[in-house]
Image 1: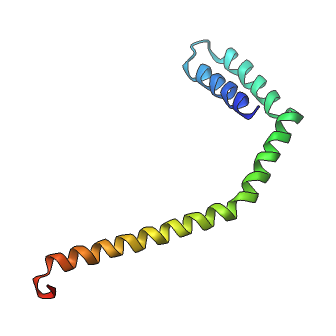
Image 2 (image 1 turned 45 degrees about the vertical axis):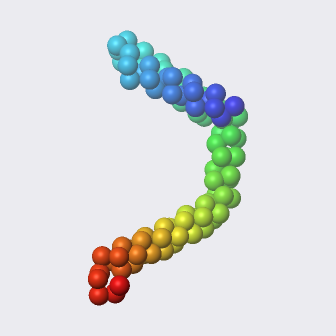
Length: 91
């Protein structure tokens, strides 16, 4: 359902941006899009999506923080390794 809504929204956006039909056609498309957006079933799906994102945000934040820490550690090790290889005094 969500994919279908996104497809229709993208199609409408592309048409509006690419069409040469003028302001009247733009207004007609815009009013239809507004009606769809404010439809109760669409808003229920929007609410579900917002709830899902709010539920998953802490997990994503933790995974990103862990990945950043791992990347920083790996970069530090590479710098240390490269520095020790190029410094003849430490060999």
